[in-house]
Length: 424
Image (tube, rainbow, N blue to C red; front, top):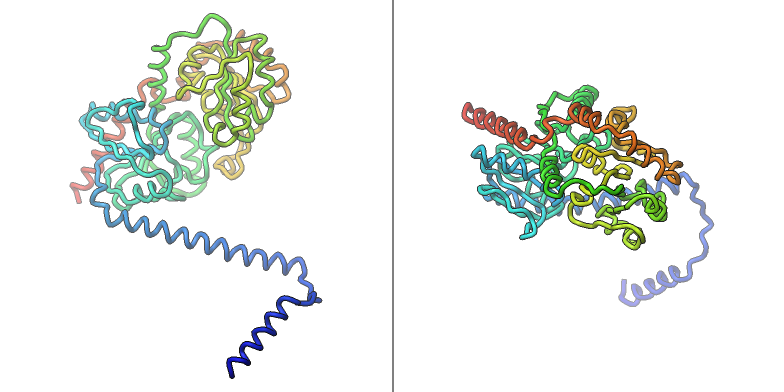
């Protein structure tokens, strides 16, 4: 076939494409849907395939370098807000003669509290690259607050003998993602509710029982120290408004105008959640612009909590810290919290923790928001600090000394790993 013939045919083909007639064809809805899923499936498969290849390369790089990643006790902190959980444990470990390696997914500067002597600090990259590093370290024991080991990004290293998770807040398994604790060798539990939750999940899924330690919440010790340093709340009635962020948060649901109404009866300190600044910047700006209230944006809420007589919140973890550290009441806007896609689907029922604390963490239905000042007054008038401390002793292990207890438990785990290695 001559070159001129190819040129002619190409021109005809191009003309047909440019002047194509309307096709008298029909694709039924079922076929169209099938085609859509096929195409979208191919695109998604290509995306995850390429991404998976990238991270396999990263993993391979760290695997080659694993000799530089050897330590006896590795402690992993994924975010600066969890340092307060580990500091009491690090101090107690050093006192026992154990020298841990503290891996942070962020840089530490002079604004952070200095780490105890003999603690080795290593800053690693945040996100996937940092986890690729952790997935290939060599250690007798790795401790973290990060759930879902061996489920998503955070994978077990063949050179780590034992994985333990330490809880950074009072909670239950209901509101964590599926398999949050399933693949850990041990869990340092905050209290009896989560211990019972984990045993129930193990029974439902047919999993072997892991080691569950009665530990507590180490960072409560740091909060107790802050309370003593700052002093008692002022004599005037002060309400601290500190909700969570996101679609179920108080400011998202009710706006900010209620602050001015509340300020007519009380002094009001507003502490917007730090994540609002990132995820809800316009709403965050409206909170900062609220008149007649004091806005607190310090790194920790210790100063604001110390000054307040009562906390108004929603589902934020600050509710338990305020109640149990300061022994003062909390009012929460009790919007229905959806446990869909979380371990609550497996456990069923409602929050046991909420039910056990309702005398001093008082739930108020959303439709009562216009009368919130009245509910706060009633809560203050009926509050019993003695009843609060009684419930606290039932719900939280080793209140005020969990750092020392955790260090002892970790030391025992390390000793067992050494003895096992010696026997082999």
